[in-house]
Image 1 (cartoon, rainbow, N blue to C red):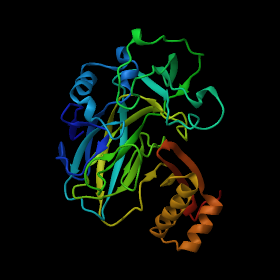
Image 2 (cartoon, rainbow, N blue to C red; image 1 turned 135 degrees about the vertical axis):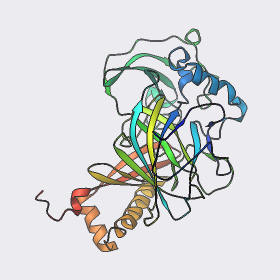
Image 3 (tube, helix red, strand yellow; image 1 turned 90 degrees about the vertical axis):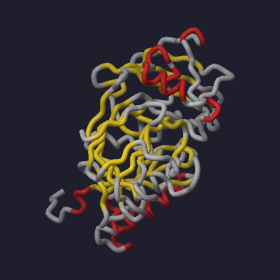
Length: 343
């Protein structure tokens, strides 16, 4: 670890990115930084999901000024020498759990809240989980109380609701960064909700320790934000949230000057994942496919070759459907580029 960035009132922001903010930390390319990230859903069970650090940030961030998005982000971190046209690699090396609880909200922005014909069509519901070994187990649920704001971190104390027991099941832990990225080039406060070419709220559950996300730098010094940490999530994030919880992450920030990515690109041990977005899944699919072709061009394939490869050997998966715009990612196995493969 070269640097540490604590979550404090002066290092956290609620609901926005802004390329005019002064950096809270300035690092060299290749630096490893330990970053405290706080969940915006700690108020769902403040007796379990708040400590002095979390409470200090919640109390200091003016309630009326929270937004336009609903997430707490830590940053920005300036990377010395980064300029538009460069690519920034954010490699996730490890995570720590400062508290052993998380929350899922079946929210009004979830898929079934405005669609389908189920009791979930017009209701919001909280489920609180506890970390148990390598899994999270549900410990209680409650309906979101009417008149309370589910975007601004309202505190719902035990006496405010009736906490109901849950059916027993286990969700494997898949800790990851829901939000990470560079500052967008648009001026002013930009909502943390929709992802974009700069990254942000991509919500790819595969962004776990041992993987790296690459972002096209939009403004000088990149200005990196992180947050919306998850204990686990399924593809789609269909209820509106994952299991939201606090994580302290260890990341390495490395600048690449000779390679430009078309948007957020995740690298795992087995594959490249290229992300695209759109107001509908159709538009997100088109955006993902076009960006994937540009990514493959950087690896030496022309458009016709890339199109054939993606159809024959790539997979297109839904990243999320609940962040104002939809996300799809193309999974391009690395073995496709291994000419000696026998598979």
